[in-house]
Image (cartoon, rainbow, N blue to C red):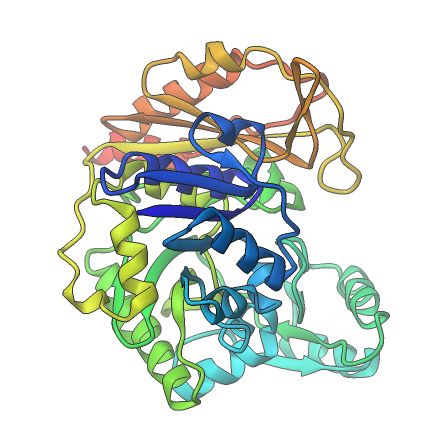
Length: 425
């Protein structure tokens, strides 16, 4: 099977590394990819937002399967364009991708499906936002209705800050709107669920870290690290989420005439009242993909193709490593507000040489013989080991060998989970 992965980030690099371990995969391509992917895939220059160009690229390269990584091409209908030329594509249709493209649409589907989630108000004016903030109280949660690259959410006790974020979102005009939500207490969990439009197959849960700084301080980001497994998660959590959230949502989408085939990302808050959905995404999450796929032992290509072609129910049960995986994100100076790019990265080979570690490229570019930063999040450094302590040690050992002037990373990824696991062992 020849597989083309669309995207440029560490999520796509993780997908390629997992596909490269699959004996049924005969060739890999990344479009447009990044320098780190060149060791496992052909790099093909293409505009990922141009459905016709992506479909033409896939046909010319001879792809049997296209995997769409980022959310923006999915919301733009790129998966539809690929399927229209007769190539299997893993990723929901434009209409189904509205589960991520519109928070208001997702809330409507959740209501129809009876999914437990936060109370919410969809607001189109500043006055409506102010009333919703007062009705729900602090902490305030304000979400841009549309795509915002993981940075469209503000959670704050400061009413003025919440209102200012809403004003910025609404200032786009047109059909701009925001969702003001009830704050959900408790730790968050990310669960990826594959669907072929009817059947749901869950992957292993993970937890990511949204805030920039240690101790969950600083601004919200696209994610600064992640780990799996979750030793503190209650028994039966995955089965409960499939039964109460994922399957009802897939069923509701089918009833609407917009079947969801692809990856349903369920972001959960483990509240005192039980799991509640924080958000849906329509694709693999970043940086959770980096750790979840590090533990997957089942061949990935056949799994994704089964979801893309409606035969997921017949797929064999998934096999997982008992090891733990931790990823730590290295970000550019100034991220997330105003990242400074162009810094030279040193020590990549030394980091990759650490046993149990691998370095996944996100925002990188090649400049002559050098690899330089080219985005806010630059690398995901993944460590694996028999437990979270060991996986953390590997990840941070590898990260310590990488130099980026002014680079930022958290030092506490998975630290509390590892400590709690030691205490209860």
